[in-house]
Length: 322
Image (cartoon, rainbow, N blue to C red):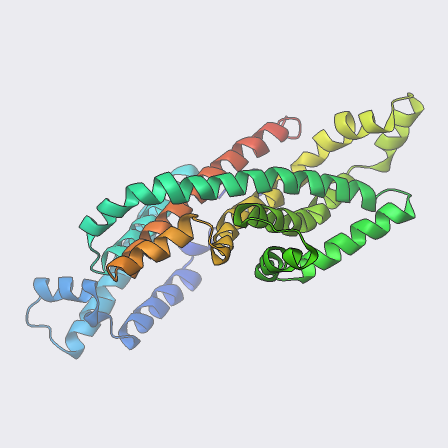
């Protein structure tokens, strides 16, 4: 198995010492948890009607175990990229099959999905996009303050990251929405959600930006100063472009987390995706249909962000991969 660091890792799944115990554990687990009562068990019963009770559990466990072993045998003989995509597709199909087993009302989903997308999804994307921009600016300012020689700036930055990383996001939403009116400032629900997400994730991302900037050798700072380059130009043209290789991966994870945590702003009545999924499901007591639909929409948005993150990583890794 070859990876980009050119190190040959041992193909553990093809070794009998790993392959056989793994299949044995799968077989034992399926038999122990009564696999014959599942959808696969009903399929096996259709193929072997005489297998009822314990024989059905045994046959189902054996059938699934053989299927998993054969799948691994076939997949491991494909090129690496094809292995990844095939396994990803198989697992996605299992998740969709799991959702399908809930006996969903697809007619209800079809009636509501347009409203979820045009209202809930648009609001979720709006809140997330604005929060991401503000959080990035706060993180950059916080990182520069922490790395500065100004004690006041360092104190403010350390207090900011300590406070907003120490409080739960839900509490921050309530404090802004319910606390500021006590001081005479009434904040609407949407600005409340944007402010809470921006402040919370800006604090987390401050440490990411700081670590990325500190990953660049100090010799580059000294060389730039020796050439008479202004400090701001050193940061924007020399240090930040190189530090992006370190900053982008964890920042991408924060963006995906922010996208999902935007559902918390529903507690103050924002008509985002989670709020509409919950309220629309209450109309006909079809909660699971709306929860499954909202889950798939969140998943698709996360996939888009993952692909975008991958493109950005590839862009900033061009110099290192030459």
